[in-house]
Length: 205
Image (cartoon, rainbow, N blue to C red):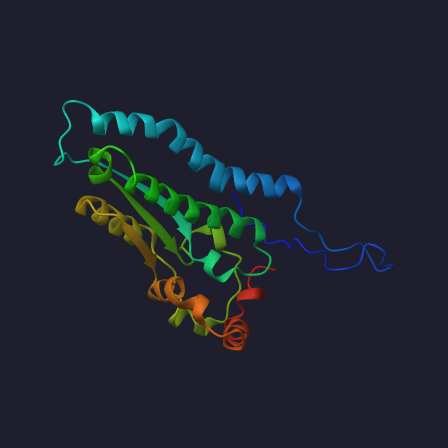
């Protein structure tokens, strides 16, 4: 599904006598984004988790069984929240929150087999080398600090983590790890200066 890249906030007054106002996000577009990016994954979990739990807690299971891993593909954008992406950012924020909530549910599950054998991995990436964000406009120099993420390489990293049998958070490229950990600690004036320099709020309009 394409990124709409439309504002939620009207750009002109409805009472303005200027030409037709620029388009804003519609309820249909918002619902479609949430359905694809959040409701789809959570519905898959709703139907698959009972089977996963059953397999982990069956009489043939043991604390050393291979177990299962739930991988959630989100985005680094909820940490940055660019303008014109309210529906997309909201859906990815929901996914990241879902991962953390589910991880805590597993940690407090009554079965030790579930606690030890059900793992979760959250993947929060920058721009992927796919057609989804092909219309993104950023200054060329930013590619030095925010290169495109190769989906094949990312898939190999995810499979490696799954094979290790550990839970965790994977952020790529390198700047995403920094943003995910420290962006909320950046002073407001510095944040606004960085946002202007990299054009993050002008990239999707």
